[in-house]
Length: 110
Image 1 (cartoon, rainbow, N blue to C red):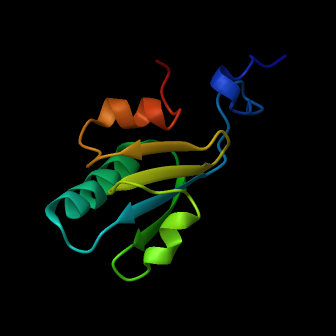
Image 2: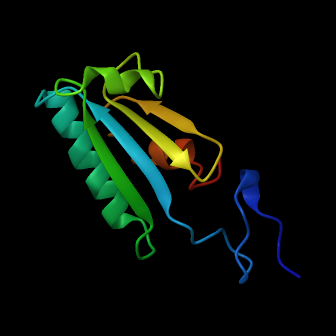
């Protein structure tokens, strides 16, 4: 019998959290210092987190495509949106607090 999944994530057959990839969308605004910091921090977090193909990342530059902000109701940038697995989560800022990002993405318990 497998252990129940924590915080709504599906359990894998080995009793851990699901190995399904996490779909992330990072909204930035051009090459601003905060946008560049958020992108660098996200790449570092994804590289440090164990698991092959754990993250699928889409970068959306609102300077080039401002209409895309409406889909995820983006009001501040940079904003990271976890699309899947559900529930959808949003983190605003440069993602420099790794622990807060992992908890916010539901990848680490509170």
